[in-house]
Image (cartoon, rainbow, N blue to C red):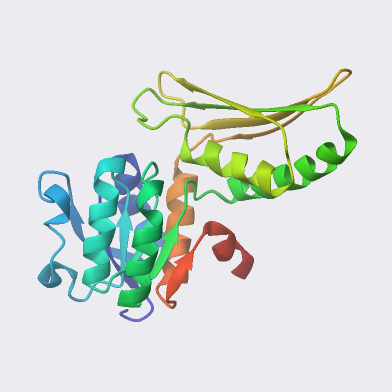
Length: 235
């Protein structure tokens, strides 16, 4: 860290990577290196030489790349913010590797504050409505046509929140991929006489990059595996 400014490696040059670069200076960060897919097949572009002097890596790529990238970053001892989704099957092994290499990781399906507010609200609503009885639960998420994973990582996060709330019934999860939708999630509970919905609508993808940059400052000072709930709790 140079005078409180974080030195970042950005892995992935898609929408999020470009937004992080654009907003970095506002959040006391400097992007000193980037890696696109061509320069980093299977994580091979992540080397000790490249990572020298890097405070935090920002990993926003694709599900098939994320695990190899995080493993390479752990071996190089680089704290990481990872926003790629769809790699959950590798999480336990990567958590062990991060612990062995004593790095900090913030892993989140969604970096907006609002998404984590609705996460907490869904958990509480599920608890109350499970006790009341007579309701069914559903989640519908919408994203742009280029988003690969469906359901989204955020939809799965919200489903887990409903389960944590004690929900015992089925949770129907559906997805829409069309146009340029930045991200909409609706969690609903339907009863015989009423429907209750909790929704989160993103109007500007910048909210994701802003949250990721806040997470970078959080994880630069820590060792362990964290979520955005941990980041938000400190604010």
